[in-house]
Image (spheres, rainbow, N blue to C red):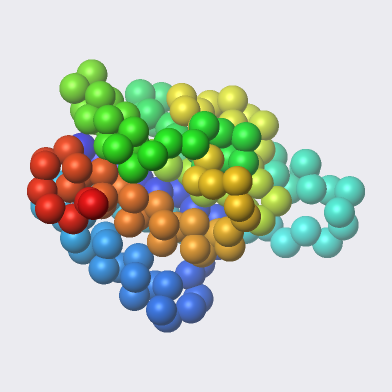
Length: 156
């Protein structure tokens, strides 16, 4: 299974980068994983948010193949338990899906075109997280999903 995480913005805090790197390393035996960091566009005028989101969306979509299964992280998405995420990944693998792409938008969200391209919209919580935290939580949950799928100890 190939997994890509497309995220707007870089991780600057060392403790978050270390945590993300640790889970990316742990994922190695289970999947090929790649993080694509795209530079967000600075919003100088709040009236231009939709236009900026569309420009960011074009950058995101340029990294997505037509056959890729896309999961966007969205506030209005569906919340899943760790077990349900594991079932989703296992089901996609059994269906012959070769690549799952998770998309984390900017602090203003994601464009309507990227949301429309999504095969599944995932909400991490009703709470709001920094985008950098969302990336750490996501890679940990992907790792946890593979441990659940393989019936290995980690998830309790």
